[in-house]
Length: 207
Ligand code: GRF
Image (cartoon, rainbow, N blue to C red; front, side, top):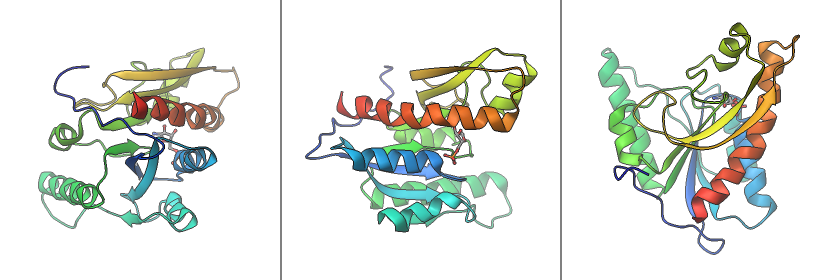
């Protein structure tokens, strides 16, 4: 790993890494991770949930699992760049206040600025619903189908300053069938994601 990354400390069952999960939508990946952490002794534990979207269904896992869950939407500021900076500063401050050691992006639909990424590089992971470097960006399933791809999957990767370009930690594959729609493919890939992400975090947090 490049020297500009700061690896998290090694977590253990006795002293698990304090993790924040950032979401934007239904939070099925968050739910899978929380179940995984509860199902057996784990070297990572979710201590904070943040959504940039107040309508995110995944927020209710906060009360269900007794974890602080915050809505942190973009502030109402005219200038777009300033708005983005203020938003990420608020998220960063909350992460620090909650003593977070690892940030897990799980369906978080905003691209983070290089300023934020630099602060968390090596301690910032993402899951993307394609076999990167194929189909980066927000429409991976649409792009895979439009391309006539016969195989797709998901990728867990470290986040760098690019869009879905960071070091790949692991991937999982599935075929694409002739009658697949975006929705069908999304559900099939999510099943893979829910198995892969917790396992990769187990490994990454304990190495
Ligand atoms: C996942 O497929 C993730 O890879 C993508 O958005 C989806 C989020 O789903 N970036 P959910 O909110 O975890 O249900």
